[in-house]
Length: 637
Image (cartoon, rainbow, N blue to C red; front, top):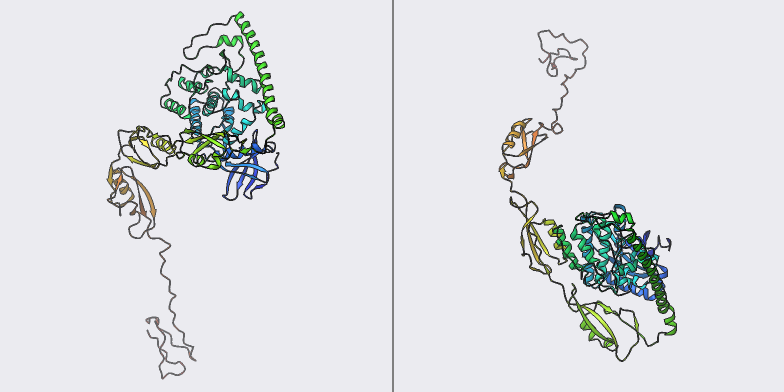
């Protein structure tokens, strides 16, 4: 693959920018969706996988089914397509790190953090399982931690395809640490298989260790089938007993002792969240009763030396365990050697069986039993209505149908899954091919929780997580009895069945009621007087200043709350002090040039001198008509 796709645009829409990850079946790139102008993640099926037409069909079918999922804890799938020989999925781009990276950085997680992550993973699985989709590869590598601390589960579509690669090699070592015993034995996986994997993830978060280790994928798989790990509290005594019980019940190798659904596990997680000291007293776990193994063997994560065995103590009560004698130690070593030999033989036998299975299905079978031209391909029934399918003569001609009902949010009769899956080739016969259709029996009833004395923000988030599109009304009411922000009244009452679009009213405390006072009139007061008057009323003054020519400089000309307005005690009141008239709008009077006396052209003779008792002329000189050439000029003053 290298980087041959970087810079390429798929379907004239998705421009591939950079590689951000790689897995066993696909490579993930960051891309820009030019149509919607957003960044997305593109998962491209590797070239060697794309050569298998059956795998390609399943890749598209499974991805399209996952695209129907919509949950805040599941990575969204936007598009599934094939372009110029490239099979790809377009997904939500997550800015964050994987849970595996987080555990590697931090080591043992605080139990509250582990509870927070586990609850969100279980909610994601609850949603997927309700739509008939099993993940099959839950592990920390497929769980993304966002910057806000929430998680999203990824790789639902790819996980099912991994079941076609049944050979346990080093390439699958990362996944085999988390697979359920039934998967390790090659059996069918269901919702309980995902729950087992969640238990292993919890174990790793709480202890920073995996329950089973080994040199090969096969040896680890055998331990899942035949061994019981150390109790988490033997590794980390700080784990609450109730959380350890939840972890070990989820990891029970016995399917019947395990949680039967993610909803059941969520109920215990919620009980523990409300009361961390709770104990569930699950006496029937862990157990290997129904796992076809006669002997139950307890193993540690790593081989334990004799001195370390002596040092170990029982968690909780502090009692020292019995010292191991030399004879017991040698006997344990012999038993360990025999076990190792048995495991080796089983590994070789399993590997040979898998090689034979692979050769039969992908080489010998097609050669010895070539497909006849009369075979038909099983169509896609998922997404159709059961009555529509069973009344279609084109279907009933070749198939007979078995109906299995399952609770889901889809309409009654909606087909959730089918067996065999779409795309499989079958030979028509007189008995017709049996198709098992899992059909929706409608939405599982959901009931109003008890939110009394709970934070209203938590309640609002929980109600929105029910995906019922509830009309939620939040009202704050002053109260001295209840803590600020906590609910003391709810409608409908707890236990009431909730339906889509239903109105829910939550009333919470806004804290003690604050007395109200009337704002005093500060107009034309000095700053000191205004401050004093506000303090008298229990208000806080804030001085501002500006130019104003309506009041004397240094006095209040404006306040932000009018006099007589009712406000709570402690409210800040802004008042403005006048700086006097604004210089920018006040211009000085224009200066007029002094008037000058017009000068009469000089006469032939000089004019008579003006006596000192005479005043200066204030206007132009007057000329006697009898004078000639300007003689006889008299001052007008």
